[in-house]
Length: 502
Ligand code: PNW
Image (cartoon, rainbow, N blue to C red; front, side):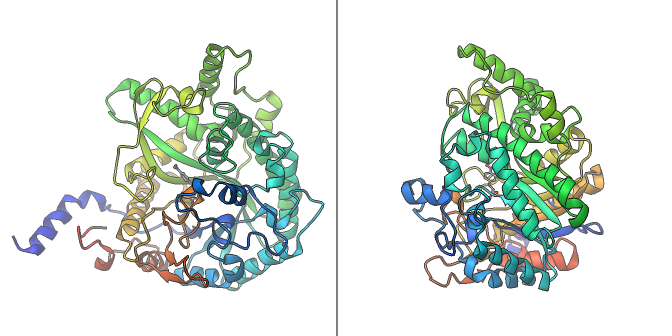
């Protein structure tokens, strides 16, 4: 068979990936995201103090896959003008980045404002404004000042006040230049991975206990920052404020199996609902199934109080409705195979509390073990959010794909194309109100415990070179063309020559 015939046949086989919709609705916006600790470097200069990721990567380097750290990272503290040039080249409508708490308030408290930190973010904001790029700014993307961790971090209820104070400083210092705020990036990762496990700094690993102390504090801190903005700053600054919730979306491995279907719903309530239900439902509070499962488990463990308790009426009301949009970070879908204790679950733990067995054996692969390529799962998540949370306006605040850093990054292009197709489908066919999309990430950066071994960037970053040179990958052309035309690119050159499909 001639090679063109083979290619044609493959194209037909994969025709289901190509949707009828290619054009984005009027007003839909595109951006890219980064986070301070992953790109800035300059970890101990110009007044910045140590944060929990500095501490972890310096004292336990074996915890980082390639032994790297964020000391220099992409050197964005010195090279932010290059970052902005790249953003301008891509043509993005907005840039999502985060503020480093320990750079702005080195003690963690408001007694000391670091002028160099304030100047850095003002310079970045001014450079963005020159290029008409809107800032979308995250207050907290995981880099807690170590001084506050020494007091218990997010397991300490005093953090509600400390976070509110920090947010107040940020609104006051930068709020005239920022119209869109995110309080927390991925509360699940903060609470479960860092206090209920050791997957993220500070790696407290108080499974089944610390994770729930964290969520009580974090949700209250989020609500206080929202009310502060809403009452004091919004009337003069006229901006919006939201939270970005991460989903691993769970599906039954056999859609005909009623038990698996029910357990997948439980798992989604534990994962997404843990933080979304208190904010985005009319009822408010933690999902009932979480409260019930954890009470039952806690009693069987001989405790006299559940490890997670429902908020009281004051806090249920105070937390409800505290987000102007639903920010969704989405990467992947995992499966539920049945009831019971997952073999990887610690005891007690969030995973054991769910009472289901999970597997990552689904979809296409990436460089990250957890990241499976399952576009249909994204469609189901978005439809579920519409029905579970009363049709909220949604921003996708992260979505992306990891490889080992190839410049011909067809895997990334195909991932974006398939996940963006899904967004078009749910907008046009299901009326899901997705208003904007944020690709993760501008350039290869310090990927937390994976170091630089898993790369999510549009630009390749050579971390062996002191100047941290950035090289555009093929996906830069793809995203640039997409944004320019507001349409999924159809060019042959974006198709993987191995399979000739997008
Ligand atoms: C996000 N999951 O983390 C973070 O917001 C980014 O800082 C990070 O670099 C990026 O995604 C890629 O990892 C996630 O298991 C970690 O589904 C884990 C998951 C999702 C996002």
